[in-house]
Image 1: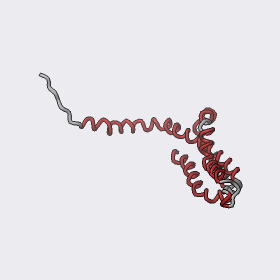
Image 2: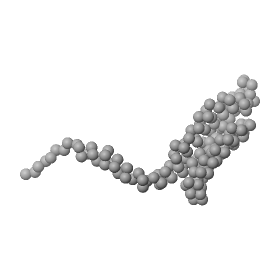
Image 3: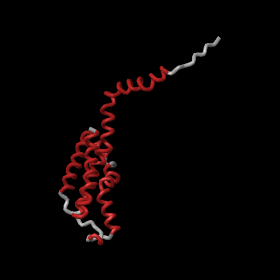
Image 4: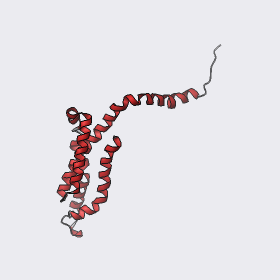
Length: 159
């Protein structure tokens, strides 16, 4: 589950890194000297805003919505809804027709990523703690206790 939920964020990051070159030209987010409509500083700021929109949404709203969503929907429901939001936002990104539309869709994507990123680790830790408890105990015995038992010890006999 963790890897599938992480794929949403990784897919977005990878696709966005490759697509920047194309969508900045398509939406005319270029500086004056490249035939665009913005100054170089404004172009840099808009590029950063578009690229960083999901992380802005995660920090400002997405992570903070985790507790209310978990209370309302439970952890499974929160994971489902946040992945649904991310899927819809990803499709929205694909059909965006302006940089403003792309920014809004990426911001909505961040709402899904934020609540998913904070819910999945907690869900997995609670769900599987009983199943892995014996494994951790065996690992503890194997890695920590056994080397201690094998260490040479000096025996002091008192008379």
